[in-house]
Length: 583
Image (cartoon, rainbow, N blue to C red; front, side, top):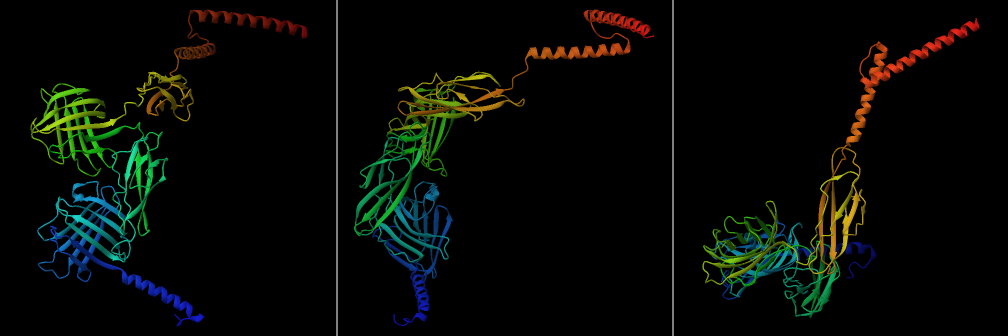
């Protein structure tokens, strides 16, 4: 350290230190794959693999926003050397980034599932994992760096029911340590839906200490309408969601901080959309369900959490396809039909079969598996449609596959269904509206099932003033129109009841130009006739002939002409008298 003690050499020493530091960081970056397997593991047959870029070629491709795939290829192939294929999938509609991906299922990119997926496979080995589960953690993800840098640790179970693990450490141009000393914070959301005013459970059970144990959990809120926590320093906490949210709900951002025995901490955040309790809900779930084709005891999908329901129908029946992702194929299908020559309407339909005939029709399938024969019943709670468009549907069904002796699946499907406590708005409007009219907006026939509507609020175009806009009955004066085209004006009513339930309804009114009155037309015609008659009189006087007029008009014309002659005669007499005097 005394070699560059003199001042002139200090800049050189500083530069040399920086260069050595950079060179040291560069040389510690490594590319390798370490795989450690348990005895009895199927894919690698319990053998470990440790390879570096000296043994072959590594390649990872960030081919899609939610997928990183590639693997390792041996430079010197041999009978006992199999190329390794790796695919990491962050989940449908989830961008690949640093963080944990837990409870993986594979291969998800084939199933189109929401959950993250992991697939470790051997090329040419003649064996693979068809239903693998596991998890992976991305510590470093720099696909645009020169060269790209990745650090991923993973665990895969190759066969369902076999607890033998495949544990892997992958580093590509990375100096990230094999094991992180910091804990891993992970947030799980066991609840299917968050609705205002309810309690919502959040869990940190998938967090990892990495070193020692997790000794502290701390839940907090980052943004959004205020919530309150119960057991905010426990692994699992209850969140009391905010109330009085606007229609459409709001987003809240929660954070979990975990600390391990080494004193290191890590955080994770998750965004949760909280629905207004007055928002329509769409869901598809089973109440019991242990039969084929579901083979499950509790499945439930709330539409809007990456799930999609496509329901079409009308009086002829309803067909609904449910997908667990906007980009996934339908996984569940329900078909409900009335008996032939009947319309589907609220009520109980018993003795249903797969195809409608003398009895109602009911069919249910899941994940591409269906039943040759279906039996059961269904109860339509509500159905609404506008023409061929299904706008609301709610039904419960009991389905037997192949035989009435089978264990049934009891299911429920809801499409745009409102809580029964939501007020129902009814607006009475005039049939025709003309410019300048005073128009009444009457919502006094609106009803509320559990209490009373306490607030009304009418809104409309900016150029229209609404009188009594906070009353059930409001009014406005239709504006004057500048042309002959009608004006379309949209008015919206928002109501709230004494329990905080809300509803909105919009109406479009057509304001037409006011037609000219019959009296105005008559006056205009008379004025035109008078002008025309005067013109004819002038022409008649000029030409010395009579044209136009009627009996009365001709009489007045003659009298006027006579008076004019007499006046002229009198004037001539006076002129002559005056002249005589002057002379």
